[in-house]
Length: 349
Image 1: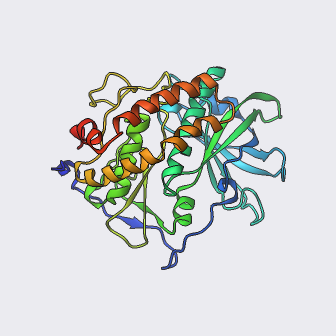
Image 2: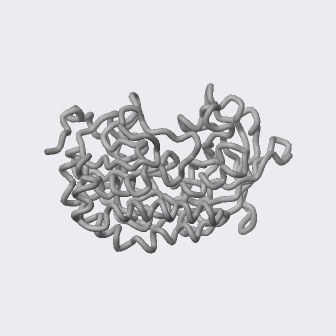
Image 3: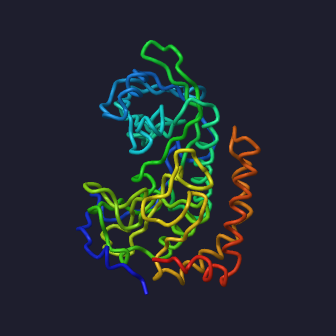
């Protein structure tokens, strides 16, 4: 029996404004394919980095595309995130780039307004593998459903206001939730910090929980978010316009997963595992039937999912091999319906 009583206090659900009909549309140019890009981000980067933990006041700068159209746009640059903004975790925080002018329809940046940039966390070159493995997780989930955030891998050259080089590292941009919704013919959903799990569409909730088990990520919640923010923790909601149930939950942020195994990652408080490499299923019991169907789909996609690791530019072969071996152990846990029932459903919520 599903234990959902703790979350039955659902906040009012508000939907994005717009026309009554919502037809699926194409991805924006930046997220239309998986080809990496090269960017230059110029601005008062050192001061933004130094003050990241205490605040995120936007500072003027520019973002430029190297090669291709060579476009450049004025942006307001600010630190973002929670854990990775803390200096004890990262010496270089994730960034938000707010474009200050609207790109033309023909621009590579068409449709972009606020870009979320996942950065390298620390200047140690070894930290690149954690970023690249997290990027791989986004690509893997893309294989399972179009109801997923697309990510754009980039080489990012950071420069100070005078154009002096600071550091060049891999990073990736994350698709905007509104763009994800539009290309699927859906709209964003805004709620209070808590919802009832019963209003989630079961198939998507089951897929979400199974994928998080696959990569061993526990840093999420499908029906609760931070106080004062929208639901959910490391997830967002979309739906057909006007729907008040069957909401679709979409995950993001996989850096605390066992597959990535970042040195700063630890299990959330209250979850009885020793470390992030220890898997634990946290799907809802009332989605078990859907989870068996989704587990079969994942088994069928095992080859392409694992093969993603061979397509990530710059990922060290040893890191890729380690991640493959780790995923294989997850796939062994869902090898049959009986395995899923015995190994995963014993800890369903």
